[in-house]
Length: 139
Image 1 (cartoon, rainbow, N blue to C red):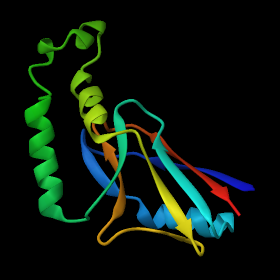
Image 2 (tube, rainbow, N blue to C red; image 1 turned 90 degrees about the vertical axis):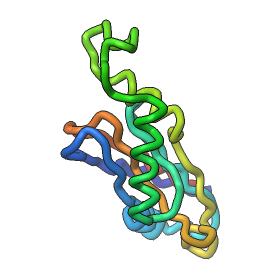
Image 3 (spheres, helix red, strand yellow; image 1 turned 60 degrees about the horizontal axis):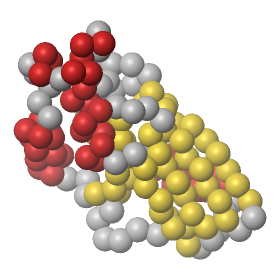
């Protein structure tokens, strides 16, 4: 079995945002040389997410609205976590809902997706450099 590891770095200029990272992960698969296996893609920060869904702007807007309704950023005093001097408790909750990682099958050297599936990095406490781990295993 072969393995491949790469870190992808992001600095989303706003507090929240979604970045389609499918092409970057596909590049990792190509560099790995692995034809049959699995790709793990996970956020290495507790206020960011990796998830799979459709790359459609209306859906991304709906996510923004839905997540803000579930865990509004303000008032920051509503969260006990923010009493530590942080202001990002909502980002931790949003990440919990959106998930930490995805695993995608690799078949014949390509990510094996269903229709419309794309991989996204979700940022919920941006304006600083964060990373995503891509770990590929297989033959």
